[in-house]
Length: 347
Image 1 (cartoon, rainbow, N blue to C red):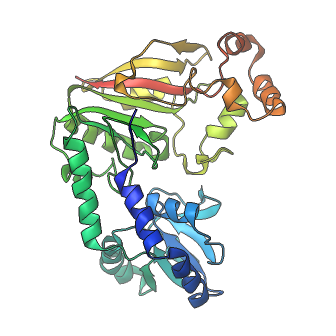
Image 2 (tube, one colour):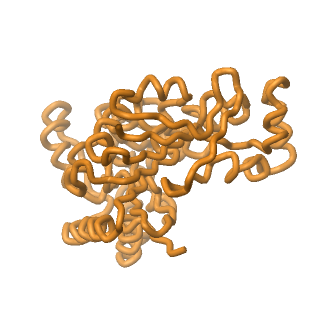
């Protein structure tokens, strides 16, 4: 099966490589030696930079983004809301989004009149024509398919033929204008969001569902998977809860369960078809499903106990953290890392 990589991510990586970006980082580290630096923007651009380059010489005291609350953690850094990060009095703010002029305009119109002038500059100078090209490429990919099938928050992962990958820097699901610039209303056949919505505040979740309703076709499907708050294992919960110990959980905002999801989703607009989930008594439920609506990796079959735990000691901790009366279903089904996994269908 052919695989496609999110064009936006690939293009940013290639652009940074072509500019010998490590040299730029080293120059900034020298320029701002012993100066306090705040990174503004915690999207895929900063993730790409952190993954591929050595930024340890930058004296980064925190990362700011609208999705954070003060006190959060992000990749080991202190996280700040976009309205409060200046209380740390950074010597410079490095803007780590590829459309830096939008953030600069926000600084000039909103922050500086309120709090006074402060120093900032783009971490990358990404040419407008390259950004425009990335959008054209995305549109071509979307509309070259027989059906419009979009992966939300792909994080640069490879995706199967017939799907188009996006991430927050290109399609912020909470912002209506992000949908408007790429898509027609009532046009999307499938959306896939695996472990995306737990990174949103509840009002952002509701905004995302409003946008999804407008752009899905009638009968269109959002395949939805998030960490399951009704999973009975404390080991699992400690990894996946907001502020937990697992990778990425420092940015988790909500701990969904089947009941909370049913409260949030407008049942006049959507049907919820449960596929895998624990109920509030810790009992696991599982239904058969088709891969036509998208592949989810963190499920009972695709991520069993043997893949979930890294060593025998962890396996014991995981098993012992489950109430004794519920362990039988883990033994019988080899359950490990499961998700609250449903299809949400537009009426």
